[in-house]
Length: 438
Image (cartoon, rainbow, N blue to C red; front, top):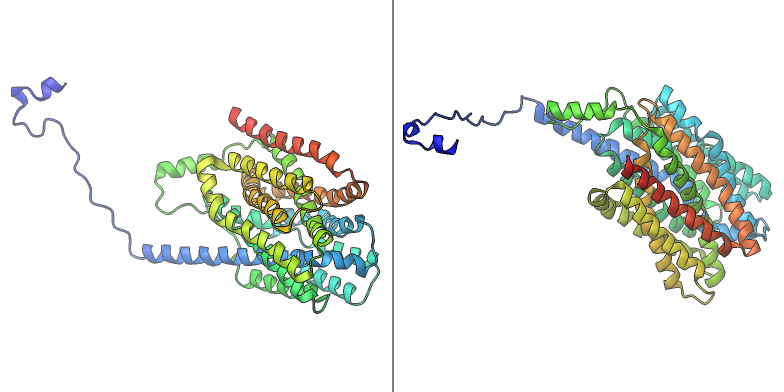
């Protein structure tokens, strides 16, 4: 072919091989640029409102962390099991309604469910403050804390809202931002809780009630109600759109989510026990005041937020969701292992470094896990699918603190942590193996 093209009989014939001239770039229709700007502005408002609601919703939970040691003395509870009961009562209330909210949102809308749950959470926080201020019995405090937990299970609904209103490629990043917004509650909550509790012990609960009410108003007045088809990227070609549509309507394989559900249960147990007993560990070893204890917890949460915002998206694009979650799992196990084997004379900086390693790992695992689960949600039933995960997670949050308190009281923690680590790593690698062989 080359010889024919350059033979003498073809010389001088400039159009022997027709060449399609390059077409000039197509101009946007009038109003398209304005529509794009308005869409971006609306998306930013929606994103920031979601992040604010997620942060304010967790304040009623995190503001109580510095209060836990003194709360036990206020109610004259001398056993470590009492710390677990405080966490388990909240999780028990959430367990009763955790599947109700996302399933209900599939029928009446995400926005209405978020408003009702946030308003009920405000009432629950106020009741907890009244129980502390009026010296109610410990059983009554656990009851009102359970009522507050019934209205706190909105995380699956928020995740379903994100799936409904954001592009598929943006969902993992938005979920990471939501986790970072929740981490902001872990940053602000312990610091504000310690500051307010040092002055008026019940003040953090009333402050949390005010924040939940503000979040409910934001949700009602600012957050748009998702409607219409799932948004797609502007400028997608027809080929890309067809691929996206076919991927969206592909038949899901829920069986692949079974290892993820197991991992989610173990992860919920791990997080709940850490947040319940790590403040108690610091108080017993170093006798930290409330303000300094809140500052230590705030520092760890600040590190988690930095990793979620700056490192998660980089790891996801470079290694994928599966390997990012496995990497975070090993960091979590390493941090908790250092905390368990640390002798009683361990310095505060070493414990802080171990907890920071745990926090950095949790910053990778927390957004990667729901982003992976959402892939297997059936069409139109995202809320119900996330509700199943929420039931599993909250069952772990109910069982883990009390069981861990009994083990801690019996000095069997070191014996039981070995099998837990093995099951955690085995679950993560089993799920990764299933995905690789798919």
